[in-house]
Image (tube, rainbow, N blue to C red; front, side):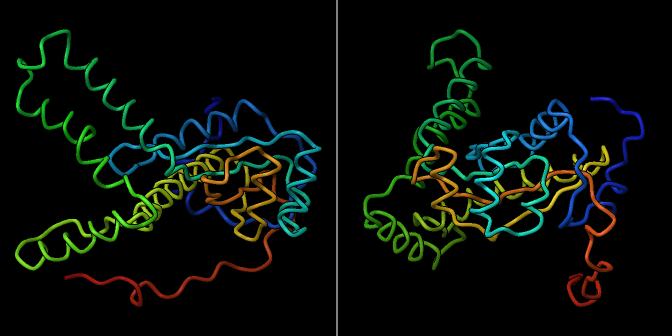
Length: 245
């Protein structure tokens, strides 16, 4: 990526606004792809990386997505879009990828020669992750929830063990990646608008995304028009949200 005139992290955060109207300037596909790569470096629970990113450049698909986004201005004028998808349903595949990676890092040696730390890392993905993510009609998740609450009466324990809890975990990670993407875009003077107003069923149909996946957000991309920011930025006072203990 060309680093000319690239903003610092703090500058990019200060610069980023939700832009509702974009100019017709074309965007560099490669730069946006690089921003998506940077998005994948975001923190993610247990390194599961339960996300996907759909980079939309086709004018036909952009028009379809604009309708699915309820015709809002950010979608109408976007030159490109990035659809961030949470894929909790891919937990087995991602766990297997982590196991393969760890095994490659530990070297070609018998498993009995693994250190305690190496065995713990493998067991984490082979045993703990399936315990957290596996469910059947919500029944197993409810049983885990009850068991963990009982254990929690006697010692600290991770309590969010239901399928709905793991769904939230996947959404959190996807949102962190989306923020990475938008800050990366801001750093190269590209503008964005994260959109939550959309018909998720139609979006999945348009992009061929399975029903088991969930749309985290759709991000409109472009260069902001002079009318693209509707008002001065408002934030509640820091003292209302900052608590030092």
